[in-house]
Length: 117
Image (cartoon, rainbow, N blue to C red; front, top):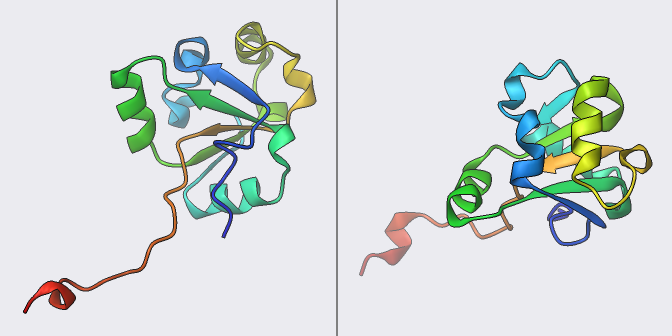
């Protein structure tokens, strides 16, 4: 399974510039979370994704703990799109999704019983 676009994305926006996206549950937009976000992100190239990046230890912790979320750029209201666009080095119009959070890398599912002697 792909690991998301955290490293392959061509565009990043700092948490402060993307603060209008939080809380994501309040957005009037197409918001995918958890497995649905994984599926949607797997279907697009990294060049079509904007990733929200931390600006401090606190925002790093917040974003690491945040549910993996993919927000459709086309579904965002114009004022929100404009504010996000202001934080980018290129036009928001060239992107499909905004990714918040990071996929957890695949790891073996171990039982605690395996570690007892």
